[in-house]
Amino acid sequence: MSWRITAAIAVSLIPLLVLPADQGEAAAARKAAKARPKPPAPEPCEPRKFKIILDVGHTSESQGATSARNDVEFGFNLHLARLIRERLKSAGFAATRVLVTDGKARASLLKRVGTANAAHADFFLSIHHDSVPDKMLEAWEFEGAKSYFSDRFSGHSLFVSERNPHFAASLAFARLLGRELKEKGLQYATQYSLPLMGRYRHPLLDKDVGVYRYDGLVVLSQTNSAAVLLEAGSIINRDEEMAMNSPERQELVATAVVMAMRAYCEKR
Ligand SMILES: [Zn+2]
Image 1 (tube, rainbow, N blue to C red):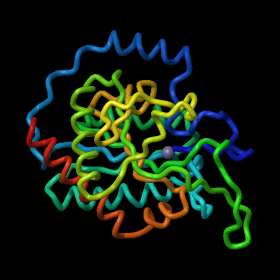
Image 2 (image 1 turned 90 degrees about the horizontal axis):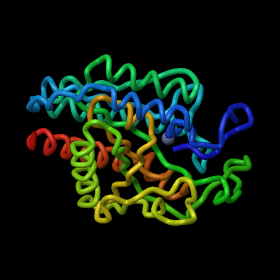
Image 3 (image 1 turned 30 degrees about the horizontal axis):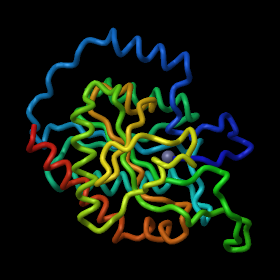
């Protein structure tokens, strides 16, 4: 997620990728969702043919959050998505692809969804790294440059939209992934259910493994396939940023996705 908006891209105070549709668009989206023909029941999952799209959060032009050490979220997302693709392919999910989108934040959201729907994706997993709202940021100096951090929160989180036509399947996968991450010793980010998050507060659907409901997200509500957004960890937290940069943590997350996808696939 992205909370810090630099002057150059100060188009909105809303997080850049996880930009909910505005009022008019939301109403139009609901109307479109109603008008949309009911999607056919999902085919049984054959890993080799199962089209998984790994959506890289943000774009090279609109790079999402800035880490405590001034790296951009887009880079973290791209690196992790590519690793997950390799691990899924090795596990037999040969039709997995990484989706990199260009352009400005809002336009890129529609492009992502358009590409996934045109490709008749079976599953859409959006990869992000988390930050905090601006009001929680504290200043520090990193390599001589004024930088910002918040060590207050850490952890991954999973988001699903009830407006997705395959909400139950999306939730099922999110729970499987949350379970895998928990079993690997990771604690999810609990702050999204707290009042201090204000407009970014979300209902916690699974207290055990950290799945939240976020209905307005374009990439979750407008995709025709099941869709989940993974915030893999916080890069504004100084310790967790280091962890997210480590091959060990990256492998752990990628393995968790593979295990969850296998279990999800077997249940279909
Ligand atoms: Zn993001």
